[in-house]
Length: 488
Image (cartoon, rainbow, N blue to C red; front, top):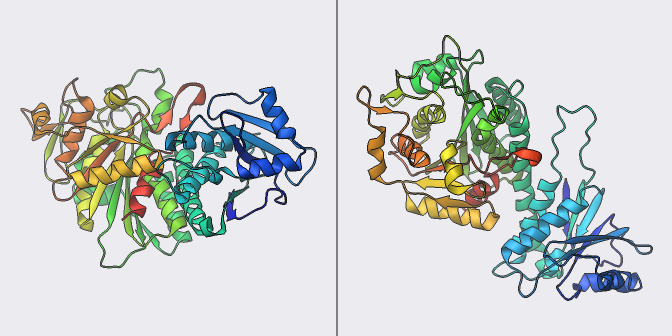
């Protein structure tokens, strides 16, 4: 989508649809008043008629007979000051309402939002507009993209234009990254294989000079001793891949931040096979990998002066005569041995070798992202990502980025008291810790491979996709991660 910001006169700005606001008492924003006057009071009459709902975020589309704007979308604000949560709702509902038009102009930056500047407002508007226009079409014969391809943000004053442009660019970049992650997540497992992800990484590097890609195949992983990752791929005919995408925007001497994504392109559970109900959604078990791809795509759009490595541990977890069995013991790249008690706890097995490999970059910090445990969904539902960290400053930076972007996380405990549940009689550790605190013990397992650097783990099992009628990938936590990286 083409985004632009400008100081525009609504009486002269041509648009397929103009987005204005009305408060709880039907009071219009400045541009809304100007448009109402131009339309000879049509907007005021419709508002007095009560067609616009009273709840904040309610919208009413009005076809104008005269003027440069073909239509106007009125969105309701609430009583009193507008909170950041409320403003995100205004941005989201208005963007959804105009996505079927070829272009739109938003005048929502005329509003004042508690604790937020114009940069933040523009960022939320652009992010919402970009997300609203996503539609999965690759496997549909007659579906077409939404027609909205041009979106303009109005700056109330010329002195605010630069701030609005900055926020718009960040939000647009976050949307690009989120939609890349959604597209990869929504692809079926027979298309989006480890090799497909490797091909996508190579193709992306060819387009951007600041990006290089390295692929470790099965032979190279064996040489490095990645027995944990390889144990997951044993049962599949699809070969695994460890994908490294290196974005080099900072100084050569600057240590990178490393993102590690769980890339199980389909998870049957292996020998510990999952129930058949909703197993199709296990194509989303590469949501962590998808988010890493999304962040890298956002970075090459935004071009920040930082160094970031995106690691994707890609494999397919399938049952076969070659598959790992409960009770098998494997040796990880770190040299630690692992007793596999449940082959459906495979994400931590691919991640532990990737975390060890991440150490070779001498990172400033390492953040892994994984659809790791159903237990996290039970704990936090689908609203928040579970966050664990061995460094409190890193945890707080990520939490703050989540609040700013609206892509929120919640910190969970990573206490030593949970570690003994991973003790094994036959190996250095086992890959599950029992029924209780499943998300925590999974994080404890990963923490054993991340002692050499500042590390955070994001369990996105509840936030990476939606089920039911709205089934589809969300693109989370790309906005959070981009927000965090831009602050480094």
